[in-house]
Image (tube, rainbow over all chains, first blue to last red):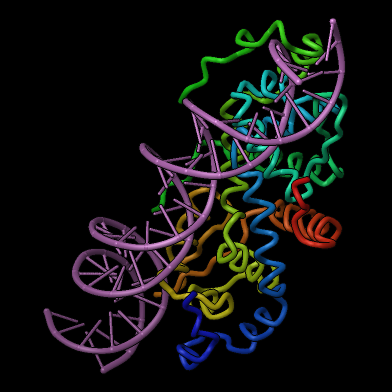
Length: 131
Length: 131
DNA sequence: CCCATATCTGCATAGCAGTACAGATATCAG
DNA sequence: CTGATATCTGTACTGCTATGCAGATATGGG
C-alpha cells in the first residue's frame, strides 16, 4: 500500500497548511475509516439491499422466503446472508431445519432512509455532466 | 442479468407466501435500489471517505490540500473527486487555476454519523464467527 | 439407519473498481 | 505568445467481488 505521502511531498505547495493539518488531525483513524468503508460496501449491492429491505419490512424471514421476496437464487441469498451475518448486520435463529434471519439493529433503517432521501433530492436529472 | 425467478420457482415451498408477497410489494423499484447501491458504493472506499470527511471538517478545499489532508496522490484525488461530483455528492468552484470542492448537501454527514455509530456498537470483536 | 428437505460451503469464472503513469487542458504571469 | 502551475483525462493493469454450480452439512420423519 503506497502511502509515503503524509504531507511532505507537497508541503510547500499547500494553500492553507494550517487548515490541512487541522483537517488531517480530525480524520478518524485508519481502521475506523476502513470499517466504515466495509459497512458501506455491504450496502453497495442491489441484492443485499433488497434482502435488508425485506427484513426491514418483513421482520424475520427464512432463507427461502427471503430469496423469493428479493427475487434471487437461494445460493446467492445464502452467500449474501453469510456476508451480512459475518459483519453483524443480520442475525440468524435456527428453527428446525430452517434459518430465520433478522436485522441486528436499527442503524440499517436509518442508513437506508437517509440515502433514500439523498437519492430523491440529488437525482433530479441523473449524474451531473462533468463540465 | 439473470432474474427469471420472480416467485414461481419455489412458490409451493414458501413458508409464508402472503408475507412474501407483501414484502415484495413494499420493496422500492429496481432503479431506486440501484441508485441506493451506487450511493453506498461511493462511500465504500477509504480514500473517498477520507476526502468526504476532510470536506466535512474543512468546509471547502482545493485539490492539492485535499490530497494532502487525505494522504493520497493528486491523480487519485482528482479521479475520486470526479466520481463524487458526477454523482452530485460534491460540487466544484473554480477560483483561478484552482478548483475548490465542497459537499453538496448534509446527507453525507448523517450517513457517516449513523454508520460510525453502527461500527462502534457492532464491532465489539471483529466479524462474527460464522457458526 | 435412511431419506428428503433446507441451508451452507468451496471453487471457478466473469466483470468491475481502484491505482498509477503519462500526456492533455486551463489559467495566470510576464 | 510563452512558460509554469494546478488540475484533469485516457489507458493499462491488478485485485477484488458477485454469481452459479456442484457437493457438503444439518435437521426431522419414519
